[in-house]
Length: 269
Image 1 (cartoon, helix red, strand yellow):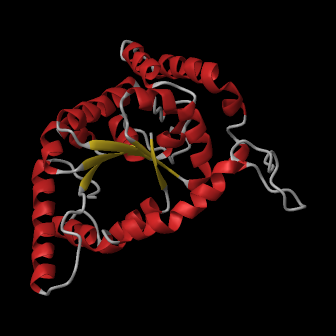
Image 2 (image 1 turned 45 degrees about the vertical axis):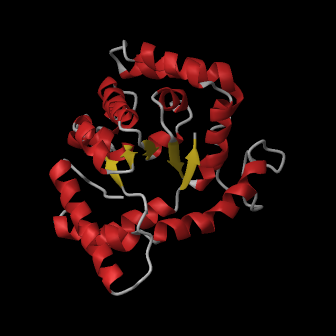
Image 3 (image 1 turned 90 degrees about the vertical axis):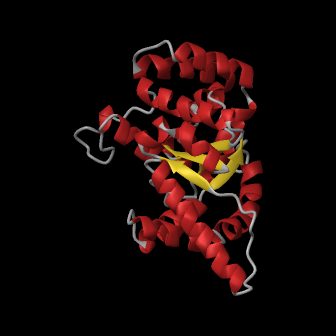
């Protein structure tokens, strides 16, 4: 998966480098998966806008919402002075994601969403309504996001998106999404901060107990981690080499990015 793609020319060049790597491996008779899926991260607005031309070149899209949002609305989310302006429910963000979703569907490839937005259950109905195939969230958030998904239908989420696209303010869009979320999984919203509770002096985590409805999924999550990491690890070399050739990032940056990504869990919506 190629990060920070801004347009088709970069993607084509990156794919050429991957083909060169495959040829070298084949010549050296080194086994590799010739049919591995190759994707592009959509985290720059220009990539979202021209996603129609990118889709035929790859097997999937992964929308990196953290960067996409801050680049789209010019807000540095780590700057405390303007952090309040960082709004995932901004109409422009919603439309950019929809552009990517439409391009993916038209060219019959799947698309996923990663970043903090993927783990915000207040926005889960919106993401499902946009047709997301996978959500990538940290292991700690998997149980509650899965629970949110189980309590809504695709049809009502699609209707929500139709209504949200007619709204012109982030607050109005968020409130509309929250209405459906409260109706379908109000208790989950009320307990959404359980995972960030501070450990008490006795070593227990405040607000979290074995009787929690999320505990049943945790063991399953832990079982999935080794296989997922092994799956991702096989792609790191080609990604680093390809992105170095574009001059967009150093190999250390790429490996850091991929390692961070592989620490998240991919979840079918």
